[in-house]
Length: 139
Image (cartoon, rainbow, N blue to C red; front, side, top):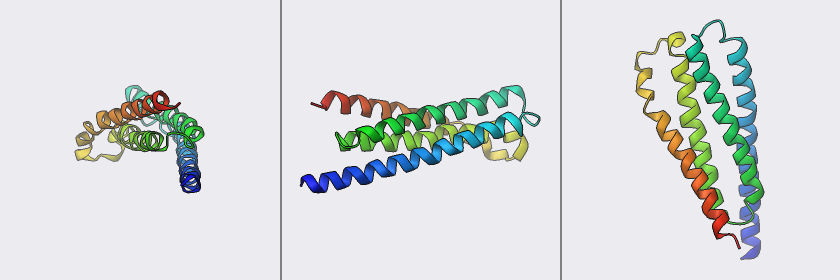
């Protein structure tokens, strides 16, 4: 049982680090893209939305890296937190990237993404709650 738990923990740890690495790399690329390529194309308010997306992606990328250090302990709560942060980045930051560039790509249906952003925010909150519960339960 202990060996099985250790293998599960190592695989989960590796998965979390891989996901965090990809999100971190994308945050740097998207941040630079926004600061340079989009600066001339977006209104200042849309550029600020883009920056918010990058910032929250970075915050939760660091949270994922932090979780990877905990993955050998409360695996269920930490695993949940990692998935909540992952889906939070995709929904929150992803929707903000699309919403901020709506004038460039001219998708008329893009405003339908507005309600997706708070769902991503809810996933972030659930991730932090899961981390809190994992910490409280840890002996």
